[in-house]
Length: 126
Image (cartoon, rainbow, N blue to C red; front, side, top):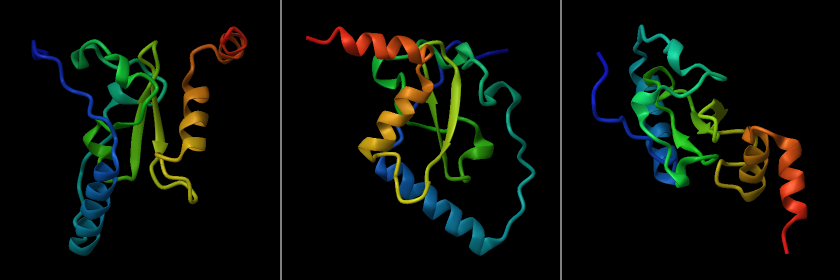
């Protein structure tokens, strides 16, 4: 049975990235094997379960900490679009961090539910 309180979505920050890298280094040093499996409800392309509550304006199309425990030490973050679709990205991709303006813009375009409408919206800017 689901909890009545919504689970929180946490913005992915530089501190989040540093903590993730520390956990990965610690795990690598300990060489432990975990039997975690990816959560089927949190797969890429699926809708975010309603247990996470309503999406706040600041969480749509923005990098968020991965909510699936399996991916918390895998250098990933998620992005949720307006339709609550889950997208997962690598946090360390080439030299572009998730905080790079070029990468942030590219991610917003990729997760937009109707990319062709985004181009139309840009033409109406005064």
